[in-house]
Every structure is written in structure tokens, then in C-alpha cells.
Image (tube, rainbow over all chains, first blue to last red; front, top):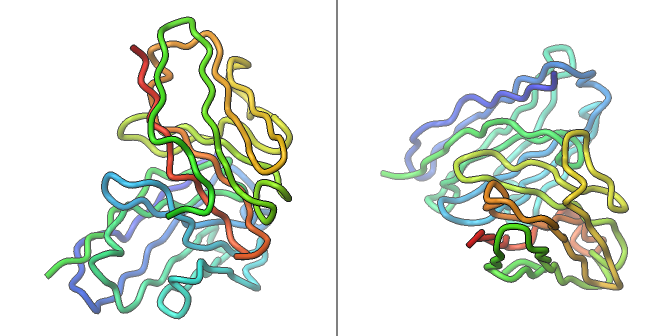
Length: 114
Length: 110
């Protein structure tokens, strides 16, 4: 059974940093690209970015380039999202999703507030 | 403002057939396949349709997708109360070089 489990969410002050993790199981993690998608409270889905199956290259939505970094550790079956210089508008549930969104995690809530 | 546009709401009665539209441009829907996702209240999104009207295992054939030019549609036949959810289209945009989601359509079963 495919499982994706996010962790690392929480409350952070504006300007702070946070690292989300996504633990994958039930499939050959190294064979799949992975995405991060976020959803602000009461709003729709927004693609954050994705990373190639071997972790060699990541792609981001323009508005987040330079602040967010996606990485992938195939030995640990884990996906990461490093978020820096956080702003209140980054408050959202962050989901990891496999390839073209065929499986999703339960989400991790990130709240940016003083 | 998303580059692909969905109506904010749709509704139907049990047993009815409803369609949800997703309008884009030549750089996204016009060039790429469209995924459709369902998000039940308080849950993570779930893939309903991908590729050329393919359904993942377990998705009922009441759900179907179609595309014409720069628009796509999700059709739900035999509407059931458990279909009440938010529905999103998603596609790759060749100009932006990223995935784009529609703003979502809230489906109400009357």
C-alpha cells in the first residue's frame, strides 16, 4: 500500500525557517518524481514544485524560487521541503504527492505568525 | 488568479449527470493532458482522472473526463450524495514550466 506521511509542520514566526519531511513507503521511491502542493486555509491547491526521481533537479513555481528548496533522499525514502524567509501568506497545509498526483499524503499545517 | 479557470460552484440532484468545466489556453490544456482531483471535506485530494480519460483503480466509471481544444470537462453521472466535494483540474503549462491547478469547483448534491 502506497503511503506518504508528512511531518515537521508547526507555528513559525515571519522570517523564520521550517523543514518538512515526507516519508514514503509501499512503492519504489527512487523510480518516481515527487511534488509538493500547498493549500491555504479555505483556498484552492497551489503547486509548489517537484523533483526528478533521482533527486538531481528540482523545479519551482516562480513565486517561491529562492525561498523554498526541494530535496529527495532515495536511500531514506524521504522527500523534503526547506522553507526559508517565511511569510504569513505561506500559511497553508503542505502536501507531498507522487508523480502526477496519483497519491497524496495527509498534509502538514504550517502557520506563519508572530 | 489561476491560468486555468473553473466555475466556483456546481450542483445537482441524486441520479443526475453534472459536468464541471476547466478552461485554459494553448500552453496548458491545449498542449497537455488534464488531471481531475476530488477533495472530500477535511481530506487530502484524490486523483480521479489522468491522461486521456483514465481512471485509477477504484474510481467508479461514473466519473469521466474529456477535452476539446483549450477546455476540459469532468462528468459525473448517477450523482450520489458522497460526491459532494471540491473538484480541481490540473495540467502542465509549457510557458510557465509548472503545474497549474484550477481554482476548484464546489459540488453540492441537493
